[in-house]
Structures are given as structure tokens and as C-alpha cells.
Length: 492
Ligand code: GAL
Image (cartoon, rainbow, N blue to C red; front, side):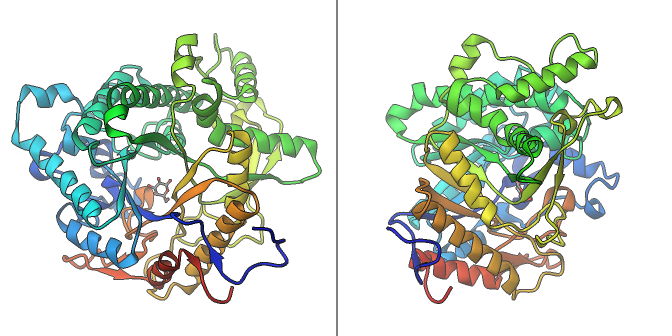
């Protein structure tokens, strides 16, 4: 279709077969934290410790109660008319201590059956209703037992994750055809292992994120190869990893220093994971040289960013079948010179200040989100150009309201509508191969350290009401129309 931005069509019809989904994650919605033999995970431990690290010391022990209220979630999914539902498996619900060895020792133990049955029902119900499950193996909720052994900071996790992945492919892969190994490894590495703001809550400035990232990439690649060699032929599915990425603009577009700073931020935020996996098995050169130089100044014997062996590079390169990306916000990058006392921090490694533009609306509920719908189009174009025009799935995108959240969320819907327009432009003008868009989130849920104060749902939940009723926001009704029309109909 040929048109300029000025002669914009009134109706925006998406390509036939375009996927419209919504996403959730096990810890954020399921509750049932110790039901039927589920083992504890790091978020259970972290929230139970209190210490004001989470809004009002809230926990997701009950959350949306999806472990027992799945049928209610299904009603929402059907009401929306979703083509895809992206959810995650609770690793410690399936394997209480995280290892398959533990389960196997108990044979056909009751605990194992409970976890499997829960997800079997979800998957079967989705398929029976024509909804494609997109299943995430791991979304921040590491079994506590594995964290006790070093978690993502130790190389041993690579084998354990692979065994878990194989267990899931073998158990559900006859019906699940779209897999995501790990949700937002970059958020996990930074928030959990560098800053210590997310569970397990121990900061490791300067090294934690790189160590975790290194093992996450190895674990992902190993699991992808297991699928490729052991399951793909029979199951015919696809496996990838979901990468969070902001869009980054230079603060001063004519400043070479700011342009380079913007590139460094994209290298750290997205390319640190995407380049090894989608291009050549190795980290971005710009990042390797910056971190090596700073590490040297700091007296480290080698770079704080570890190196892959040649064999690992070969394993990592090409270990994804589609590009899954999650976008929330945009920032401006301003170059600054590192000073000695600022070192030993991943964010300082790239010598950049990240700023919002004062004209961008800021979400009251999640202060890190500045609403910039056009950023998603630029990000998609960047992925197309940098990663050889892959098939792209947006597996999360959303805007929160604060609490109390009005059911008439007209302003929020306006952001979604603008975002969908940008997706349309990306597909039709930029020729990006985008095939799926998932809203974060189906339900209001436990938003990590913001607890229940930040509401991303298409459906409202009154967490004070023991029956946890799901009530659609206006955005849910509008999204249902978009899905029904496969795009935007009516005046823009
Ligand atoms: C993502 C994360 C989700 C959700 C969302 C909104 O980073 O994968 O679990 O919390 O952000 O903040």
C-alpha cells in the first residue's frame, strides 16, 4: 500500500492473520503460592521478608487468584476475542525445588501432577476456544532452592534450566507451538542481580548484571538447541526469548557525542542480548571495549563483562526463531564523562544520562514510564534494520493507571490507540515484519515492587474483594473492537 503520512487512511486494517494478544506472568497473577505442593520461589521469599522493598509490603500470595480462578480469566480472554494469550509457567509449581531430579525421585508424585494439570487445563481450554498459547518458561520467579545455590550468577544454572525447558517441551509441546524461554533477561539482570531491587534483593554493582546476563544467554541458547534437536521435528514449534527495550534518542540530535551515547544505551539495553543471539554469538563491540577500559581503570584483572568461548558463540548464534520484544517507554541519551567515584555501576559503564523530554506525559502509577507511542515504531524499525528483518512479536506493551483506577480509562485507551497506529505505520510504511501485538496485561496484577498500586490490566480487579471480580475497563471494550475489526475502524 502506498500512502504518505499526510494522506493517511481512515481505516487501519492490519494484515490478515495478525495476532492480537494479552499477557500475564505466573507470580503476578496466580496466587496459590504454596498450594498443592508448589515450592517457594525467590519472589515468595523476597515479599515474605518485608522490609519495605515492595509497596506496603504487599505479596502475591493470593494476587488475582488465577490458580483457582482460571475459568474467570478465560471468560475475559473470550470476551476480548484474543487470538493469542501469553502466560508463564511457575517453575516451582511444576518442579518444587527447580530440578527434574527431585520430581523423578518421587515417581508419579502428587505434587507434580497438580502443577501439570493446572497448565494442561489452561492450554487445552485456550486451544478449544481458538486461542494460541504463547508460553514463557521463566518470568522472574526462580525456585528458591536454585537461588540458594547461586541462581543466575552461577554457570550451573545453565544445565538446570535446560532440564526444566526439556521437561516443559516434553510435557506441553504437543500443544504449545510458541515458546519464550526467558522473559526480559535484561530487566532481570539489572533489577535483580545488579541493583538488588527485585528478588533475590542482593545488589552486586558493576558485576551482577553481566554475570547473570552471561548465564541467561547460555541457558537460553542451550534450551533452544534442545528444542531444535529433540522436539522440533515432532512438535514443529518455535522458540525465542523476550527482550525488553526502550527506544533511545540522542538528547541533542546534532551532537555526535549524544548520538554515540544513544547507541551505547541501545547496545546495553537490547543488543547485549540480541546481537549474540540473532547475529554472531558475541556481545556488541562498543560495549566490550567500554567495559574493558573502565574495568582496567578500576584495577580488575579482566573486563567485568565476561567473554564467551568460541564454542559458546557457535551455540548462541542463531538461537531464536522469532524476535520477541517488549516496549514501554523512550528516553533521551546525553553523553557524560565518567568520573572515578561513579564507576562500578552498569549504568555508569556507558557514560550516559537518560532523560525524559518534558513534553512526554509521565505515568503517575509507574514513574519510569513516559508515554511515547512513536517510540515503538522507531524501535521496530531499528530491529528490522539491525537484525535482518526478523518476524517480530511484541509480547508486552502497556500503560498503567494508579489506584484507584477509573473504569473509564479514556486517556489510557488513547495511548493504546496511538500505539496501534504506530504499529500500522511500522508494518505499512517501514515494512516491518510484525505479526503479533500483546497488551500487558490481561488483568490488574502484582506489579513487582509497586505491588497492587500500579494497574496495567485490561480488566480491573478489586483486591479487597475475596472473590476478586474481573471487570473490564473501557480499554478492554475498545481493544475487543480492534481485534474484531483486525485494526482501527472509524474516525482517527
Ligand atoms: C515488564 C515485565 C512485566 C510487567 C511490566 C510492567 O518489564 O515483564 O512483568 O511488570 O514490565 O511493568
